[in-house]
Every structure is written in structure tokens, then in C-alpha cells.
Image (tube, rainbow, N blue to C red):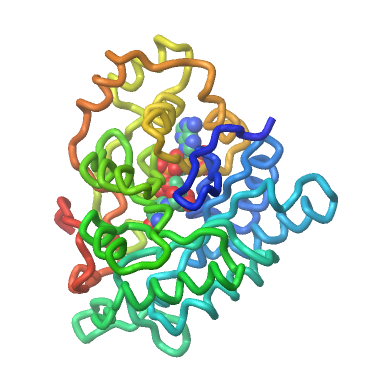
Length: 329
Ligand SMILES: NC(=O)c1ccc[n+]([C@@H]2O[C@H](COP(=O)([O-])OP(=O)(O)OC[C@H]3O[C@@H](n4cnc5c(N)ncnc54)[C@H](OP(=O)(O)O)[C@@H]3O)[C@@H](O)[C@H]2O)c1
């Protein structure tokens, strides 16, 4: 059965409260995973050009749509304006490329992936300076980019527009400078990085929050290692309090972590390429966390940011980069 729990956005569109994340999976893995996810009842798919899998996802969607196994309006597809294209003149061509790759006429949500902009060479590789740091484009003008995002809605290329990795101050700035308010802010959110202040602010202003890395993004370890970063990241599914609550309900730690997120009206997009775990991550509606359990989970906050973009060496020099990095590289 399809996931039938939704959050309503400020423009009255409905977003399924659980979606499948798709970062860090090969084309082959993602095609199988999207098939399994659709079979399991997922309708919300989170992707981005940066993940390199829009074409693979597009192939699966086309098969399902052509076979009449699903209608376009039943799907909720999210993709993003990449950090290398965060400039007003790149907004329209970039969404059109995503739509061509996804083989869709429109997406449901288009997000500015990051508030910062990074530079590339004509061959698409990252532009590095003499110190080996990524060149950032400090001329980023979020209000000007947003104006172009708004035009996409009028053109019918996306139903809704939003942002990702935006701080409270950045969301507030956009809200003061827009015709269409951002409907969504996709940020890292889990028991170790709760960001209550940011979430409360977004929710008070009708900006739905999506929690990325809701299970602690185990796969990021490989990504960090490739970028030469040494990190000892926590395993959220191994936290004693989380495990005890899972045992008490006959559920898994992942299910507890997801349920805790969606109970506050925050959307969760756990990634898995494993059919059994995909099913598990959607099977979170047959138990209830008690007030005491919620309090225990809320008390776990450690302000540990797992996806701090340090793999983009030098990005911290961008004026719109707001993350604090608690790790030493
Ligand atoms: N906007 C942004 O800047 C941004 C940044 C990061 C992520 N995201 C989005 O958010 C999505 C989710 O975040 P994420 O991929 O970083 O991490 P995540 O969803 O927190 O964790 C994914 C990891 O958990 C494992 N896993 C999944 N379900 C499990 C279960 N039930 N039990 C045990 N392990 C399980 C997965 O392995 P298996 O695949 O082997 O199951 C994978 O290694 C991404 O895929 C992406 O779509 C967005």
C-alpha cells in the first residue's frame, strides 16, 4: 500500500511524510532500489544532479508510468539546483536538464541544494586554487536566484520550490524577499543534530522541514575517506536509548529514529538500496512512542553534524556557508 501520510505545504500541495533518499548508490543499485521502493509503497523520491542518478531514476519511473502501474500525480519527485549552478541564469537550464534526465514534464519540489556556490572548470571538474582548495563563487545572490526559482512555478516546471541547508537567517531573508515563499527546507536532522531552533522557526513560518540523513548517513564514511577526511562518526542505530526503545516496541532502531522525526511533522527521507530495509523504513505506523520515550530521544541532542560539506575542501570560505565543523580534518 502506498504511503498515505502526508504533510501539507504552504501552497496546499501534499508531500508524503516518508520518501526514499538516493545519495551514494550506483545506477544499478538505484534502479533496483527504486523498483523495490515503489513496490513497497514509496511515492516520494529525493534526488539531485549531484547524486548522478537522475537518469537511472528516470528509467524506472518511465517503466512504471508506461506500464500504467502508477500515475504521475501519485508520485512526489524532489530534485535540486546543484551548488555548481547556484546562479540566477543557470536555474531554468538546470531544471530542464533534470527533467530530461528524469523523463518528466515537471517535478513536485525543486530545491536550491545549498546556499553557497562552487566553481567548476569547463570540463566539469571542480576548480581548485594553488592551495588545493575549491574555488567558491562569492557573488551568490540568493534573492536573485529565488526570483528565477519562482518563474519555474509559473512555467509549470515544478509544483513547489524550496531550499536545502539554509540557516534560520537565510530562510528569514528569503521570506522577506519573495513572492512565493519557500515551501520546504531540507536539512540534516536526527537525534544527534536536532536543530530545534531552525525547525521551530521554519514550522512557525509554514516552511515544511525535510530531515536528511535521518539514520546518521552511514554511507558518508566512504565519501569522507575519498576526500581524505578522517572522521569517527557516531552510529545512531547503536545508541543504547534508541535500541532499548526499539526492543520495547518490537521495532528496529531505524524505525524508532524515523518515527521520532515524523511525529513532529518533519518529513524523513532515509536512503536504502536494500529491499527489506526499504520496507522496514516505511513500516513505522503501527506503534506509538510514549511521551517518556520522546523525552529520552530529545535529550540525546549533541549538535553533531555528520554532513558538514567538509568534503568540499575550502567551501567554508563562502560567505553563505554557515555550518560549524566540529571535527578536525
Ligand atoms: N540536501 C542535502 O544536502 C542532502 C545531504 C545528505 C543527504 N540528503 C538526502 O537524504 C537522504 C538520506 O540521507 P543519507 O543517505 O545521508 O543517510 P541515511 O538515510 O541517514 O542513512 C543511509 C544509510 O543507512 C543504511 N540504512 C538504511 N535503512 C536502514 C535500516 N533500516 N537499518 C540499518 N541501516 C539502514 C543505508 O544502508 P543500505 O542502503 O545498505 O540499507 C545507508 O548506509 C540521501 O540519500 C539524500 O537523498 C540530502
